[in-house]
Length: 393
Image (tube, rainbow, N blue to C red):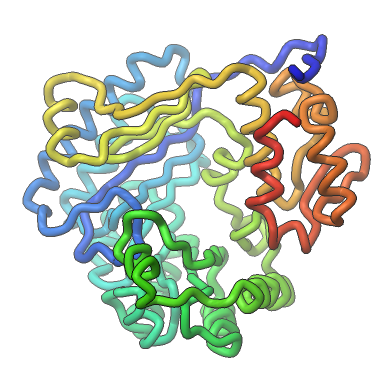
C-alpha cells in the first residue's frame, strides 16, 4: 500500500553546503577495513590531487546556486599520508570553486603515526578546525590485532599536538574485538576521557564482506565476541562517557557540549552533500552516486573530463522518505514528525505505522507525539529497527 502523501509540499532542496573529499593513500591496509584505500602508490599523490581538482570543478559546474560550504570533511584512507606541500595544495583545490563560510567546520582524519608538526601547520593554514584521529585503542595488543601501526604513546602525542594548536580533537575507538574483555574496553574509555578530547566515536568491530578479517572469520580462525558481551560494552560507553560530560547525540557518537560533528549531522539528517575522490559518495538532487574504487580508472576518467561515478540511484519520493526516516533514527533526537512532513511530504505514521507500532510494543522506540526515537534497548537493536522503516508492510 502506498503511503499517504501530506497535502503540504515537501521543502525545496537547496544546493548542498557540505563536501566530503576522499584521500585513499595509506601506509598499510588494515585487515578489517573496507574503505577505498591504496598502499604503496604515494608517487601518484600529485596526479591524484589534480584529478580531484578536475572532479570538484566539474561537480560544482553542474549544480547551480551554490553559496559557501558550511562543512568540509576530508577522510580516507589516511589524508595525512600526504606531505605538507600536498596538504597545502589539497585545501587550495577544495577552496577553488566554492568558498568556505567564515564559520565552516573543516575536519580531517589522521592516523597517529607520521602525524608531524609540519603537517599540522599545513592543516591549520588550510583552515582545518577539527582533527579526527583513528586511535581505535590505547592498548598495544588490541592495536596489534587491528594491524594498526601506531603505539598508545603515538596516539597520546597526536592528541596533545592537535590540542596544542587549538583545534578540536576527536578520537575513534573500536570495541567488540574477539579477545577483548569488559575491563579492557573500560580502560580505553577512561584513557580517552583523561585525554580531554571533545568528541569520541565508538564503533563495534564489523566483519565487512571481502575483507581479510571477514575471510578469517569464515574459515573459523577468528571467533567473534559474544553478542551479549558486545552489548555490555556499548552500554558501558553510554554510561561512562555520559558521566564524563559527553552527550550521546547519535548511536555511535559522543561529544562535549558544542563539539558535535556538524558534517556527520548532515548525513544523519539525509541532507544533500557533495562527494569527491576515490570511492566517494555524493547525494545531489535526490540521486546518490558512488565513484569507482579503481585508482587507475579514477585518474583516467577525471583527467579526461569524465565523471568517475561507478553507480547511481535515484529514489522515488516514498523510498527517499523511508531512507530519511531510517537515518534520522540514528540521532538521539530521533524523527521530528513536523520536520519530516515538511521535508518529505509524507506523514510518518502513514508511511511507517506498522513499524512504529511493532517496535513501540517491544520497547525499542519512544513516541511523545512529536518525535519518535530509539530507547536504550532500541539502540542495541538499531539495525533491525531501522531496516523495518525501509519496507511497506
